[in-house]
Image (tube, rainbow, N blue to C red; front, side):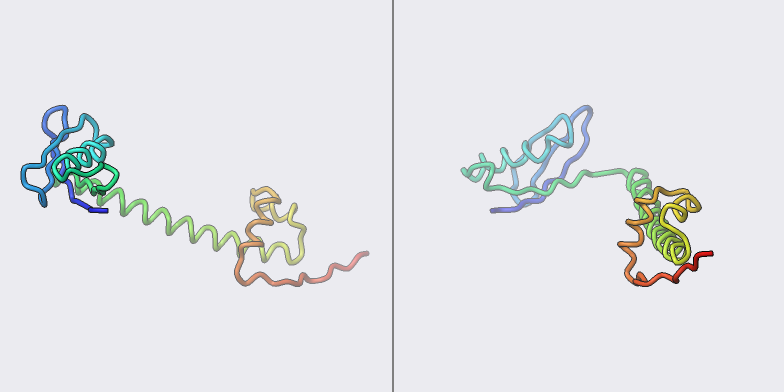
Length: 138
């Protein structure tokens, strides 16, 4: 399968598509999601092959402002993922610590989680202690 880079530039209400490796191959699409198919069809016509035999990578041309806001969004997503991972580790540790002396239901109540979620956290914890302190009955 042949792979081609496609440059997509917004012109008015359309995306103008250009294939730098194949001079003279141009196409257009109303929406960016249609660019892959339009570009593959144009390339296929030029090369006299089936569109399924062509793979494309569409690269939209963006303004500096658009690129900057995308970078910022990527940074925020990365930070959120890191915080979520930290929260997961802390909650695993909390669930493990609490269930040494409490039931999963009680630990869940204290943590504001369902007992099923506590069970999940305990199952996924890499260093889960297999033993619990024994409780003495009065």
